[in-house]
Image (cartoon, rainbow, N blue to C red; front, side, top):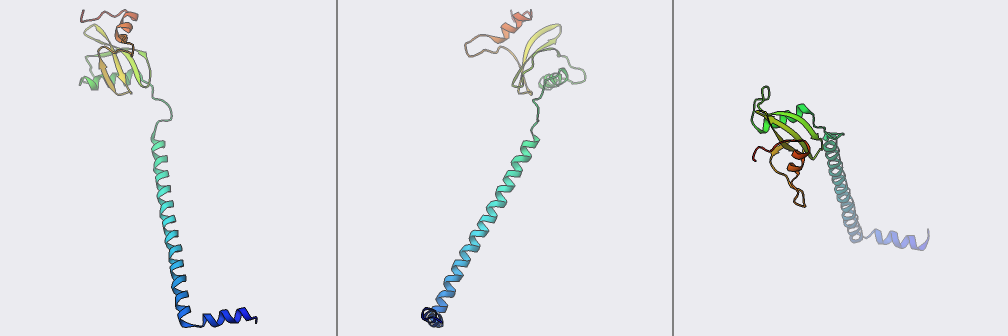
Length: 151
């Protein structure tokens, strides 16, 4: 054996050095175990979050919903609290079928009006203005020859 090896073995045989070495290695091992546990917990949480995100994305419709006459009639009847099987207000025509803002013509007692459906669920009648102040409802009524009831 060489001289350095003997010196190291002699120092390691000292009980005080052994105890310090055991404490140091135990602390070092504990830090490694705690680090691995944190990494494992983080990975599990990350993958759970990703799977929830993927599940929510899977629930979203893959195509943009299209407003049909039947769905427009359901929205109008629900908003006006009319009987859906025998509504008083009838959807006559869908003018612009846009996912965010759809324009429809409704008829009640032979009186036609322009109505708006927002985000495929909110219904309202009345004037809608663009950012320049132009009355969109009036323009569409003029375009489709609909007389305003309030004049």
